[in-house]
Amino acid sequence: MTPSNRRAPWFFLSPYLLLTLIFFIYPFLNAIILAFHQTNGPKSRAFVGWRNFIFVLSDSDFHTAFWNTTIYALASICVQLPLSLGFAMLLNAKKDNLKGIFRLILFSPHLVGQVFVGIIFALLFMPRHGLFNRFLQGLIFWGLDQEWLSNPALVMPALIIVSMWMYVGFNMIYFLAALQNVDQELTEAAMIDGANAWHRFWTVTVPAIKPVAVFVVIMSTIGSYQLFEMPYSMLRGYGPKNAGLTIVGYLYRTAFETGDLGTGAAIGWVLALIIFTFSMAQMAIARGTEID
Image (cartoon, rainbow, N blue to C red):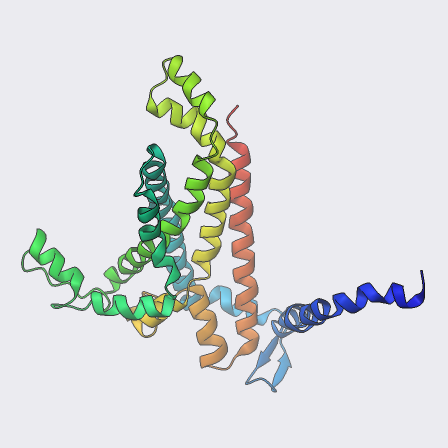
């Protein structure tokens, strides 16, 4: 092989390697270095060691952001994903020419940007004339006039409602694909053996869709802890008493609104550690609940 032939693969790989170096490796290494410095803008930098991490972990605003984000993540896993699975099972139950239309209807909210969704739902949650209050007033709670986005107790339920509207149909697609690959011969054998619907679901369906379910749970957790655009645009900030403050929102406020990029980098690494810990815990739980 001539020297020119040996260099040819590197020539074709060079655009990818260059982009990786500029947009991944350099920012990654710089974020590690930056997390141990105190900054006042992009050019002022002073080494402070672990002080940024100590400050973040002791800051009450970080505790609030972590609690808010965790509640949102739990709602995504415990409320949103069962709904997604339920819709998937309904669409997978029988053949129907309208199933494609229902899939599109349920999936289409995910195609809308989070900022646009936040702005639209800010109007829907308006007191008195907002669609949600008008619906509740006309249905069963006549005279009810909730201020969803100015009441700290209702901000998180409002965010969860919006999240369900956006992501139930998206996760449903994953579950539907998994359900369509369940071995029907096993289901029929279980029916012949006298298994009821619940036993068939638990002993046949769940083991078959478990890899996809674990993937969806982990991706929902990661997405929940990266939440920022939707609440920021819907609340036009972080809500009353920081009721809508998320960890990424806390990072944005620290790094870009106050200019402390070093502490912002430390928050990013703390967030990465949180996501990694929860993901590993979920995978360990999934392995520990293997169904023989």
